[in-house]
Length: 338
Image (cartoon, rainbow, N blue to C red; front, side):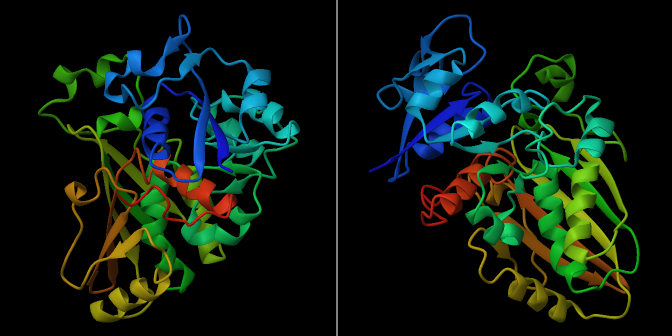
């Protein structure tokens, strides 16, 4: 018997990607779609690429209806919105995978960085952070899954082996560049084609809302507080993230050792590919995949890690499905490797 899945926020970039992936899934049936929408509309009428593949009607959310139709619910909603609905589905005994930031941080930190009081105090401390490469055993038992952000995914996976092995001598620096879909499917002057094309800009320097998420989980990997400096950039491509992470080393390490350390750390991680010494990842090699590609360089007392992901897949929808697979005891790679 197939697991029945509902998707709230089905018309956003991440919601659409979840549908695309789950249509390939052998153990899942999509049974309910919801979004902010003027009137009930067949999904394929809004997205003609899905004609003959996804003919469900997408409605405004009726929680009771979705509870009756779904076993697992994906919340692909804006930050501060998921917390209104997650408790309803959890109370009904459903597994919830939230793609927003609502359950990634503690209440105090969330309120500080997202300028919004958290209204689901009963569940915020029970959510499991959904980075499979670090938290797989906890994910197996989760009922509320906080899917990581795209920038944090790329940075944490780049930094974790080094900090876990106690190599860092000081603050880490992340220089990250993202395609435009990272901002979501919304109308904004800053995201217009004419504003983005042939341009590159830094924004929210050391004040991006993903900073505390990166710091929290890098520090957990390190077993101690780690200072994080984070500079995101917007680049004129549709999708993809390239993060360059700089980590000061306590003592000398040669590059061959560093590469082998990363390969050993991720030997059981099917979606992390560590490159050979002297090779470094590119965005074009991960777009439309759930992989995180990593390259490692040692320069004197500095460890430099380059990581690449597709922000909509490993940074959102693909990782959410990867987490669902683990939560439901499916093969971890199911529907994620073409």
